[in-house]
Length: 400
Image (cartoon, rainbow, N blue to C red; front, side, top):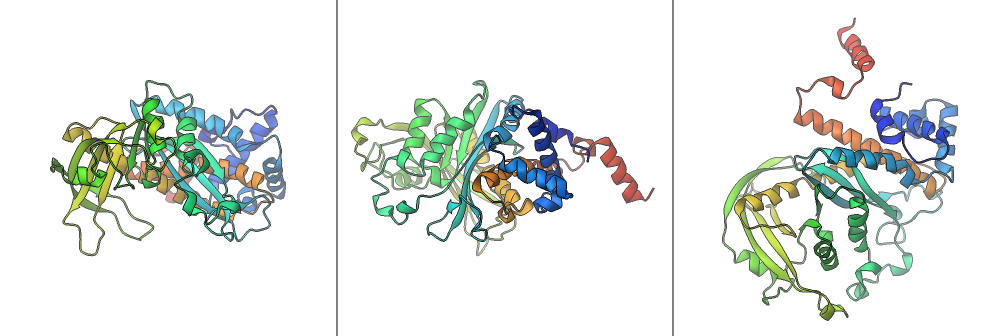
C-alpha cells in the first residue's frame, strides 16, 4: 500500500527512539485514512497488519503525545503563513458504555453509568475557516466521588473544577507558537470563567468567548446584560448560519443587529480571594437576529473579548471570527461519525487513547478535504490526490 505524502509529513517525525515504531505509525495512519469508517481489522486488511497495529497501541513506549507531536509541529508551520489564526477549544464526550471490557475507562457524564472518556481539543483555523490542525488535546474522566456535588461548585477554586481545562489548553495550545502570529482563542459559553479571562489579560493573550453569565455584576454596579442592551444599535450584517446537525436545521441566512461597548467585570464575590483579584477591562459584542423565520430560535450571540472593539468594523470582525467556532463541532462530528471512534474495541484505555491520537489527525484531514471541496470546487485534484491515484480514478470513470 502506497503511503500518502501527507501521512508521512504529519507522522514520520514522531519522537520514537526506534524507527520501526515510526514506520508502523505511518502504516497505521495510512490504513485508517484510506478506510476511516471501518474497524481496525478491516482497515488493516491482513491478520498480520492487524496484530501489528494492536501491538503498537499496547506498546508502553508509545504515547498519544508522541504520536501527535509531529502533526502539531506541522500545524504551527501552517500557521506561520497567516497573520491571525483562531484557536478553537471545545469538549466532546466519547461514549464507551457498550464496551465495558476496556480497562481504565471512567465516568464521562453525570451518572456512574456514563462510561467513556472526555476529549478536549484545540483546533487551529484560519479566519476564513480553513482547519490547520490540532494544537492541543486532553483526555480525562470524571471522579465518581464528585458526582452530584454541584452545591459546592461555586466555592471550589477553578483549579479544582473542570473549568481548569480552558486554562490548561490555553497554555498547551500556544506553546512554541511564534509570538508574531496573532492567535485568538475562541470558545463557547462553558468557557465564560473569570479565571480564564484573568489569565489571558495578565499574559496578554486574546480570547473571544460567548457569554453565559449575563447577570454578572460590573464595576458600575449594572449587570452585564443591562449594559449591552441599553447600548445603541450600531449597524447590521447579513450572515450565513451553518447547519445545526444537533437540531437538524439546514443552513440559512440571517440579518443581525450589532451592539458593542466596553465593560469592566468584577471578580466573583463568592471567592475567598475576591478582594485580591483585579477588575478586568473587556469588550462586549451583541449580534441579535432581526425577523427570524417562523418557528426558528433567533440568533443571539453575546460575546465577550479581550480584543479591542471601538467601531463597527471591529465588532463585525469578532462576529465573523466567532462564526468559525462551529468548525470544531464539525471536527468532533467527523471524528465520531466519519471515523466511528466510539466503535473502537481495545483492551485498555491506554491503547484506546493511542488509537484516538491517530484518528484525531485523520479526522482533521477529512474535515479539511470536505471544506476545501466546498470552498474551492474548481481546484485541481492534485492538491488531494497523488498522480497515480488520479490517473487510476480517471481510468475507472472513463473506462479506459
